[in-house]
Amino acid sequence: MDYIYSLIAESYKILFLLLPLLTAVAMIVWLDRRVWAFVQKRKGPNVVGPFGLFQSLADALKYIFKEIIIPASSNKIVFILAPITTMTLALISWAVIPFSEDFVLSDINVGILYLFAISSLGVYGIIMGGWASNSKYPFLGAIRSAAQMVSYEVSIGVIIINVLLCVGSLNLTDIVLAQEKIWFIIPLFPMFVIFFISALAETNRPPFDLPEAEAELVAGYQTEYSGMMYAMFWLGEYANILLMCAMGSILFLGGWISPIDSYPFNLVPPVFWFILKILLLFILFALVKAIVPRYRYDQLMKLGWKIFLPFSLTWVVLTAGFLLYFDLLPKV
Image 1: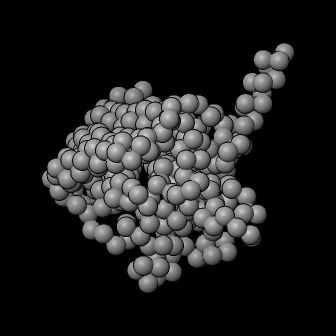
Image 2: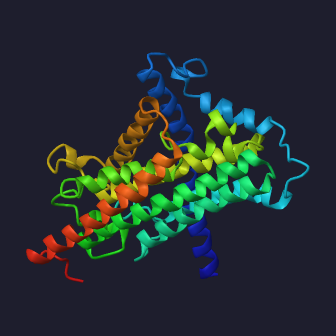
Image 3: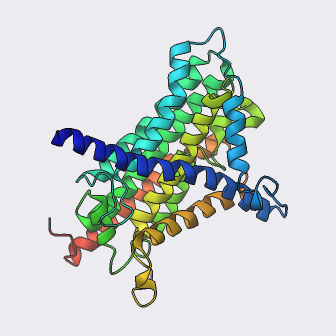
């Protein structure tokens, strides 16, 4: 009976995490559109509900009632599994994200490895969708995505090594607590910039949205999808964007730690600071989409392999050398 009760308790924890997360995805889509509109001097969503807040709900209802069309020549099983895989992997990543020191679903000792592994698997949903469609445009989009996401995961992995050298732990809570005196964005600012740009490429956001480039690929790997199956890709993409913003906050911005440790700022709940930092990073994501033009594919690959990777590796050597010389390596 104790096992059943603990299982029910864990199920409630998962529910309390997923419901706010899905609501947040709907809200950031609205925020995304409002930021683009602000940059381009137009209104954005402003009709459905106050300030257009119910626009995302209206879009969701539209997807629910749209017909799901599965191409006759497609591999139907893989075609259906692709969006489910993408959305599931995007949601289960949040299991190890600490919103505060006591508010985390699973505080495992290798949390950063878990995140890196799950985010690496995310490319499979896109490849499955592109291949199973049995169409040239989705397949080309899927191949682009595979090369792009693998390339920039290498840079993100090297960047994370810099943070781990300063902390000496793979636990996400320990990474945040190590920034009580100084946030890592200050000593590791170049790594933060590269992480942010790599996160854009990892989540297929402009200017790196080449897997779904409408100018030459119609809609890339999503071309043959409609209704709720398309919406699952959409949900997975935005959940991954929020995840990258959360990772940026944890690795470089002190997670839930208040920027000013004095009255009245220390009275604000830690969760508020964490969510605020995620929102600030997401606004930067939205601004980049509104301002920066799309890269060519050869420019994308050159940036990842010839600029980011050598620079990140060099910074790892400099960070390790600095910590070793001044005897600042964490005692594990």
